[in-house]
Length: 372
Image (tube, rainbow, N blue to C red; front, side):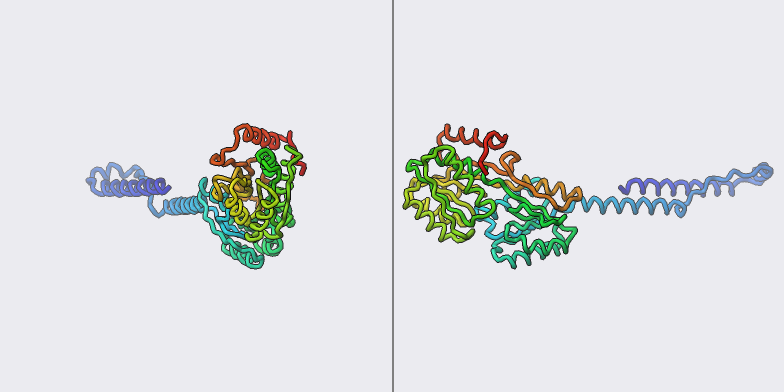
């Protein structure tokens, strides 16, 4: 960028030197030569000085500095903050978003900050405000319970983009994205498989609180079982807690006592339920939100995984084009925001898995309805 300025400066210096040489040469001529040229007006050599050229050089340098500043802005990393209710490695709701932001970071330079374990809403609100004050580009309030604080915080930072979910309400704010997920879709697929692998004819479901994507998942799972084999009994229990691991374990024990040989559940509490499933050999588990195979490679059949990066990529594109919010984005099987990931280690019958994949395709193209 400075190459052009350097060349111009050299040309000016050479021109000035040439002028001096001509003047010296004229001064060294003999009297005869001076008399011979007395009647002729001397041809003046063009005078080019560095002083005359400096304004142009300064102008170019200023332009170069502006270009450099613009390049630095282009290279600045995107700053994304996450505020979430449970641990970053919960193999459930919070990890699904952490994994998604890391997936974005694999494609571009991103600065990531995470405040997890903020099940107290007031603490979450303080973290959300703090990240906005620190100038983050996108602050993700990953919990439907954070809608209240966000509604009061976002108007104070009109140049910051916020996202919260699962939710379908932007609070009427132009800098708030809401995101949600059709968890009934993956739930339905898992339900169809559960009905086929259950030998006892009894399936147990452990829900947290009967709201949002948790309820959608449970309803979809129940519908999938019923559509595949109406003779299979599906028992549903809600613990009224997203995080109470002990209650989830108790619910799993109760289901198994009632002859259930297939279990599923939602939210970070499920580690309690999967622990019980692992203790009782032959009990199968279906996960949701994140891939839960690490909880038990011998009994986890499949997981509905939230790939929030599909929605985040869309949000980031909108933010960079000047739209900071005011829209609701939904993850589905069709757009890749939901993926049913099978555990190869479980050894699911190939025919059952093929039927499940056909169900996935049918839901994605609209030919199969979950009833939700």
